[in-house]
Amino acid sequence: AQSVSQHNHHVILSEAASLELGCNYSYGGTVNLFWYVQYPGQHLQLLLKYFSGDPLVKGIKGFEAEFIKSKFSFNLRKPSVQWSDTAEYFCAVIPLNQKVTFGTGTKLQVIP
Amino acid sequence: GAVVSQHPSRVICKSGTSVKIECRSLDFQATTMFWYRQFPKQSLMLMATSNEGSKATYEQGVEKDKFLINHASLTLSTLTVTSAHPEDSSFYICSARFVRRGTEAFFGQGTRLTVV
Image 1: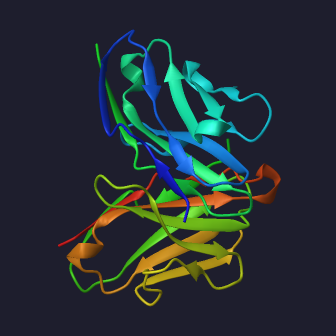
Image 2 (image 1 turned 180 degrees about the vertical axis):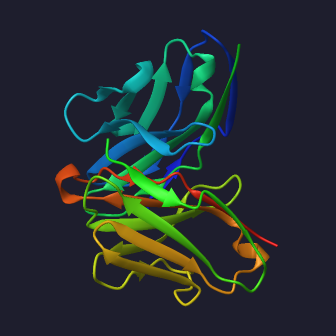
């Protein structure tokens, strides 16, 4: 069965620090990859997605992610975090025409 | 992006009662809706997949008689937790997908169910 691993469960950063959240998946075929964010008290929202093409994907609010097929990874990055980035971040993998599998989520806390 | 509205956002109910959670797609017709639950410190786990007008497909280990899913229209799916017990306390989230947007899923805000 496919699985998605997010290595960091809780990350605490100071404002302006750089962020990288890891996401690895186990599935050998073609996949679509997503990062979702859930701000406190709000919906899950799509941050960015990768379907095909350039493996470096840019999303909203300055986030980007890089798909490295050989490593089965789709890590999320942001050069300089802000207090408003405090949220929980979920990596999700959808093999073609199959169900979505989520990672366990990473809680990011940004300290002013 | 498309909007999915889930209601209620929080509910507290007594053990043995039933609770209905609604999930509506507000500006698109959802061909497929998904229901997830999340236990503390665990990932979102798919409970069931429903397509409009047909019976839901439940994941292994999910009791279909306990978690009743109805997808009567292209904009509304409901999850009813019947005879709720404290162990059913969890965070439930629905998501909807429609054909034109491929595999992208849009999520409701979730429902925090507490059974006392």
